[in-house]
Image (cartoon, rainbow, N blue to C red; front, side, top):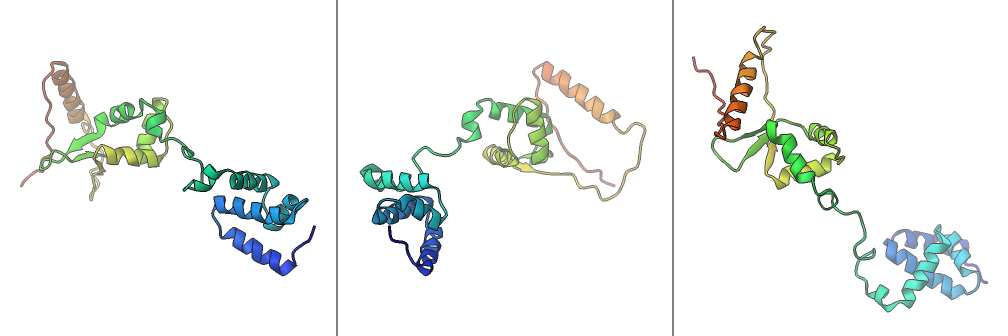
Length: 192
């Protein structure tokens, strides 16, 4: 079997590295077939790939359907979206956001949540669902949620009855909802 000069091997390697995964396999296969016996091992060594890659490329060159394949990988390859794999994901996501959702008084389509993406991931994990912050971002966009955090400019200090009003509001909300009555939340500013 003839060997290529070192300079040509370097050019072949540079060209090989510039190709897509599919084209690399096929280029390696063509070069291997030119050399005949021992070509698989030699080309795999020159191009820095596996012998299996060369063999796969040869099989693809012999298959007319594989040659017509437009993408780099087989159709249907890759990981399925979390929404397809975890059917209860959306319902659990909305359940996690139930107590942390507010709306715009001027636009009924706008919903806010004060939870960060990481906090939502942690909430889903408590329900036995593990997803990334990217999936949470997709769910927030799908359900038209926007993030919102209250900004405090001055420290209010420690007040003994600080949570008293919020406990009362939560009690009233629970009793109204139990009686199938609507609950409207309004954020007002104190005027002097």
